Image 1 (tube, rainbow, N blue to C red):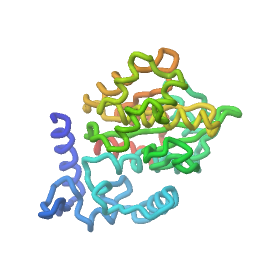
Image 2 (image 1 turned 180 degrees about the horizontal axis):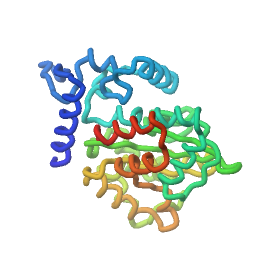
Image 3 (image 1 turned 90 degrees about the vertical axis):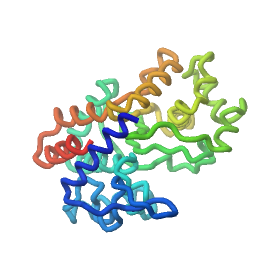
Image 4 (image 1 turned 45 degrees about the vertical axis):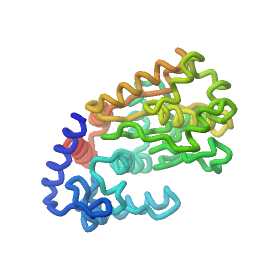
Length: 299
């Protein structure tokens, strides 16, 4: 709760710096919340780094709509709430998509350094938001698991993927009825992949079903499944969260303990602070300096 209060203070200060005074509402009573943007501000991109830059805001929206395959509602609660994480992948990864098209060698270096040089990147082939696979979900985990962001790249002839989850103030979320049933069913795809992959300590498998770990487990399983199907040759599950969110740090540490030693490197923890620091070290154009300054001020 201390982190959420700190994050709220930071977001309200940022909102004030934009000169925004109106707020959006939530609930049956349409109660206003300071951390929810008014639709007028949300539709103009106030939750995004390119606010007040109409051309850049339009290109971001076009990329988002093309990427998701359907029109994104930027005025919806998920993308207008300054304390939720849904908007953050756009602020972190759309500038990287631009870099992929314009200066890919810098993006390669950025990703290698972000993952402590544990990967080799020759070419990044795509960056996606809210992505699962081109395959139908019935061919995968047959659920709604998806990556907040997904980066696909080549290491020589190997096709590799980074499945990225981004958290801000969030903790864990409640069990879905079907989700919990599948987690407890020893013959479900969740448990089959867990057994067959040999990624997990046998004595730790029951812990993966805990509320604190279940999303980390499902996201990682999706990537493992993509390798099993030969959609990828290599996969890393990347978890990005702010240093102040100690709940997420504890969840990640606990999840790492469930992995066997030679698979721990497939799960990568990255703080917001590290992301920004690596970007500062690798990228030096004026455009990127402005973006990095925005991330520092905002988060």
